[in-house]
Image 1 (cartoon, rainbow, N blue to C red):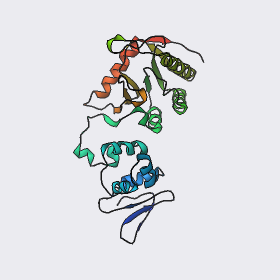
Image 2: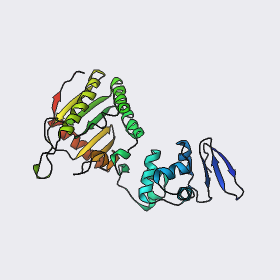
Image 3: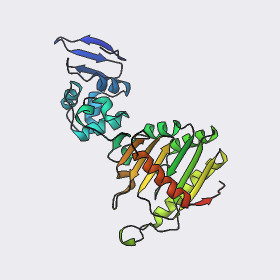
Length: 272
């Protein structure tokens, strides 16, 4: 049996338990999900914590720990809560359900992408970071992310940031202008937040006036892509975690889209 971060013992019923100072799980052999239990211990979460967050009975969480596979929406929620991939917790899904090459994870909503995931993405860059945001400043409003970008700029990582021009409407179906005063103000705030990064290193900011249907955030060969959906707030749109892999052009397609928008965007030089 794999080693774990807690101590092991058997209770009066012969069940195997994992105990730590912050969490305990009793798992039923032989179908116990050791990976899930270990992940909860490392995240300092108890069964009751998970049950409360997912609004289910603690007995349901116990059954998951004992090997039962949760419904899809609960798997996504647990994986997001723990900051790991769904198939890392339930590896048997790799043989029962296929996913296109290059897809690391799928998040039902952008605001379910853990902050730690954003930080790992940008901190992993060794050559280049790219950001293509449409009408929001969600990243710019998150100081840990901006700090991570500043740290990478100081380390010599090239950073390209492309935002929609604040004074231009964003056409949608029927060419109806959809940019609101609040959205324009949001972009101006994002530009003002990103501007000081130019003093840290090789950071370029551009403004585009076209229509884009995805927000793209890449770091070398990995990226997060949020799909724009009419009538749906940016924070609620689906988001993919992709990587460049041989034999799959999914991530490469989004990189090509980034380059197309970037090449047509206007260069701006800002000072804080």
